[in-house]
View 1 (cartoon, rainbow, N blue to C red):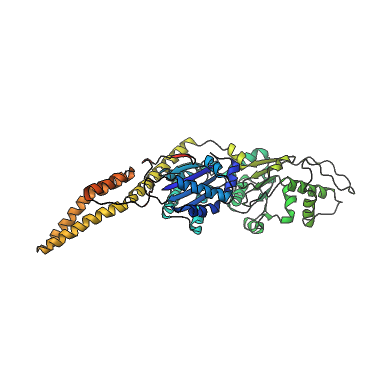
View 2 (view 1 turned 180 degrees about the vertical axis):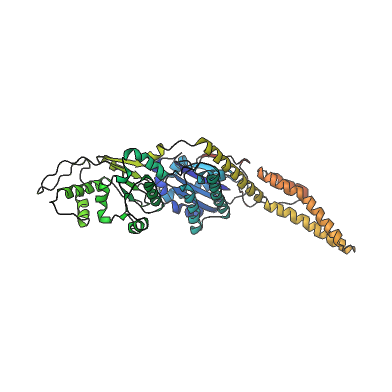
Length: 483
């Protein structure tokens, strides 16, 4: 049986999603350890989504709730989110609904920005990570591969992603009202991963030319060289953060990279540089680090006094800065909003402004998703009766071989007789084979098994539930995990 436990921007708070993103990769191993009937687990964790896809190897009719409970305990142990909170938050999808749900997610139909393209790559990488950790299964492999195929089909056959919009582009669209001229805007990009590359491409599409990059993990130089921009060194980070008009963060570090103290320290450095004697230039170096330490406790309301020995500078108007935080966990401490002139645009704010779905394209895309889910389910259901079909064929062909041997014993060894008997066996098996597929698709495997037992005395125990308990139209069966 396929199971999905889902938390997203639609049913969960940003704080819970942020916690779930920490330790998500360790959840799969713990789930398999806690419940022996779980044969596979794949975790999809993005900035607006945490989902656990599970393969439960249990006989038909067995409740999935013990496996769900074990999975919730494993998630809680890995992420620190209380199990009771998870039970109240996570949606449970099982049976046929899992395929339709994942296909919709991978196609961008469940994203903050409907039709965005990043999610397909994130789902693909989730499967790759599960392979690397040995937590996937044959059924999950087939599910995720079919999800990728469906996503490509939706993209190619509908207009849902035609505008090329993404979370990054939506954030920058929201920023446009604060930017008068992108070519003159000084931008600091924090992070060097896939989102950073997408962010830089989107910034350049808007006309941004003055972009620098900083990496808390030390990868800025390599990223800067490959993208023809300037790297910001560690000791120059505070000054650059304070001097940028727009900061866009998208790094995966587990701590705040920017906070009010850092901005205050950077502004102190900028103010100090303005009041030094003519002809003297301050270089980024140990002075930056010293200034950061010196003003870490300063009041972020902005009163940063220059050195007493220097000539006082004219009062500075607080610079206007926009910070876009696309990181999860958060890259930016919310206290930056207390710094004069600073506006913070984080994921929680961005999703509030997500555009309405494009109804026609979305409707067409959902039809394709539903059709693909039905096809996936039909194949799965047919496979679920494979042991019973094999048993029936073996029974019939054993009888056939016995009759052929008897005919030969009576002196009838002609090829015509053997061919006629084999043809008769094929004709007799045709209707049961067709009925097995029909009953399997309808979730009525038990009817086929009962018929085999009643007519031929063939008793078969199916080893795993597959998705036979769900409705034939692949409708989503969802509810809270606590139910």
